[in-house]
Length: 145
Image (cartoon, rainbow, N blue to C red; front, side, top):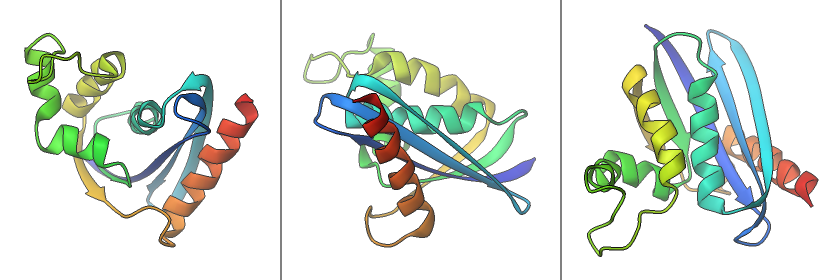
């Protein structure tokens, strides 16, 4: 199984507002940048979209380490919350609807296809790929205005 590093970030100008996402994929000395945006979205939707698009770009099942500054995405998966929400029809324990169910429905099959691990890093602390993703996401968000 190929080992791929995926760095992701999402950004939003206002929350909700115009948003952008970015992913950098690294494999065997090669690098690929992906980015895009939406007109009316939230930061968490862009963080999720970055992970989805990064994993979707893989042409075969891979071992993927995703590095992100999004506690929302990482904790929802690694602490199992998203699986509980899905099992209960996208309802959280507080009986409120789980947000972004449409995106979680796209992400979960990708997590089954690939062997995915997550690594959290604090954002805006000089991590080179995180800073690059942030710039790409901010640029994509600005292009939506």
